[in-house]
Amino acid sequence: MIGQAQRRLVGVALVALTVLAVTAIGVATRPVAGTPTAAPIPPAPLVGDCVLTRPTGIGWDDQPGAGPDDPPAAAETGPCDGPRYGEIAAVDAAQTSIDEQLGQWPECDQQVTAYLGIPLTDGPAEKYWHTSVMALATGFLWPSRVQAAAGQRWAACVAAISDPFASTIQRPGRVDFTLRGGWSNPPVRDLIGVCRQDPLEYLSCAQPHRSEVFADADLSAPELTQDQLDQGCRDLVGTQTGMSDITAAGALTVEVTIGAFREQTTDVEPIPDLSAARNLVPPADYLYAQCLVSATDPAGRLTGSLRGLGSAPVPFSR
Image (tube, rainbow, N blue to C red; front, side, top):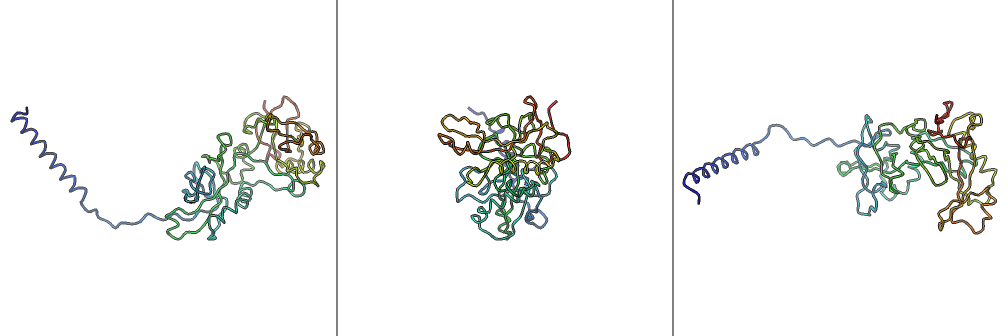
């Protein structure tokens, strides 16, 4: 049972709490001098700007299962002065719908190719061979709700680096180097290059590897010949490496390999040439050709991509 002295203490405590509450409310409701101003509206991005936050929404492969009611992809963009999730490769100021813009994904891929400085090859190399890249993600950004409410209408094509070994979903990762002109930048070309130890073991070009895959070919064209495949591969390697001697005085071997993949066994069967591939019995589930550059010495290993190498030394392991 509470005594009279205890009741006095409780009463004093309640009065003290009441005074504190009134004082706090008075401070909280006291008007603040000055004129309220709205936060500035971020401007539309420029080519070369950095994507400073991870893109989210429709138009980006980081959104598995994105539905039609999800918002279009948006992210904070601005000048590049540190780590970034990607870079703006092109900006379209036209007022097109989301669906129309998504239909222009091939154009975005071409814009990213130009932004990175990936050289194009004419003739058979361009007609039948398709440049192989890995860890390169492309996507679109649109104005945020705030920017759209302010009347901004634009779509930006973004180049980003993904993690090809994490999952089938392209998740842009933060990098601290520029992607612009990255074909001549070792950190970029080592990431986007496709390197392998054997037909089913792919790895980063920065790791020791036997071969680099420069392109994959579509073998469905009936007029395609083995000579066209071989010449196209040599032309493409010459253009993409910038090397005057693509064999490095015999230290490298440039070759076309053809493989037949069978789903039941998940094995890759090497095929000697295009004629044998077309007459394969039973037919393969999937036929592919690759344009490879390998260390001629079976024990030799490369430690970097050869793309954009020019006159620099071939990156052999020591």
